[in-house]
Length: 415
Image 1: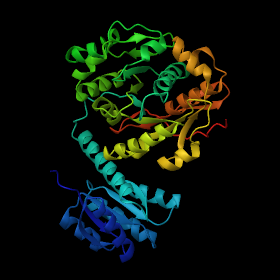
Image 2 (image 1 turned 45 degrees about the vertical axis):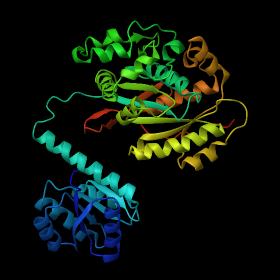
Image 3 (image 1 turned 180 degrees about the vertical axis):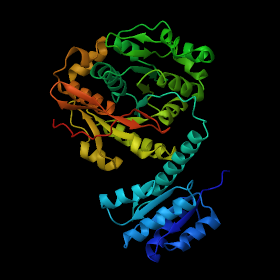
Image 4 (image 1 turned 60 degrees about the vertical axis):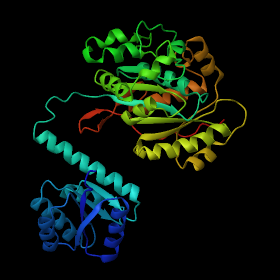
């Protein structure tokens, strides 16, 4: 088993230091030592050579920042996370300018601390790889957006198809839609396309497929969207290894700005592989009691998988015009705010049945408007002025700038 990271805690006040030490141990990291500010902290750090330092920012602030600076001068490859009870943005900015890698507000939770420490350590490892030239062969990667639901019938595929088409139409980015539904994939039918090859062909030829030859495994939709279809015989999914499915997503993300993945209504190995590769997970919940109940269990399963919470975003989908579980109740039960709410819209449902996505056929209906808004949000497209949009870039998990979903919550639409 890998050795847990060693953490040195620095802070003048004993009580806050004790609380941070308790959080570190709850997070399964090792506390290798603790000290006050100044020379004591630097001397101890040189002696212990921790993997990471947690340093308080407290009055007098200048002394705290001087300690951060001294620690980084003494151990330049050891990242420092600062913690404070203050929410002052200027204080956080000063800490970052001093060289801190993250700013943690205390009191905090063990989950927040774990995310902070792991992300900082991963960033430091990437920095070391870049410094040693190990990333010289790096290629840009697009965003992987996985549409997931706890059961069938929640409108997951309808959302995935319309979202992908809207992304292709509303942005200047290249988009591919992957039918990863290991049950009975409906993506090709909803788009009225007939793929000559499917994902099984691509997996079989993975070793010899290049960016240049990839196109022959995809079918082009009139919107400009590329589609990778599911196998005609659903039993063929039984021979697909999760690692191979992950390799398919890696390959597609190296040639497309955005990869949208539709998944099965169960948490199988292929779906888990997609979730683990995702930049953004759209968790679709219908306003039906049975779906909400299954979604509660699914959320617990996602926590077991240790997927970053900030990647999971709730999509509430009204699948009928009959009153169901109220959106605010769903938010309370799942303990997360809705990223978007898709209103019940017969035109959206009809478009899926006739192979003509509603985002193409009818731009005025409420459901389509919300789906287009969702596409613009996840693509990072923001209206600057009428008719003009900008695309925002974000830093990817490998430290490079790429087009990444911008996480902006939308207001629920009143029915």
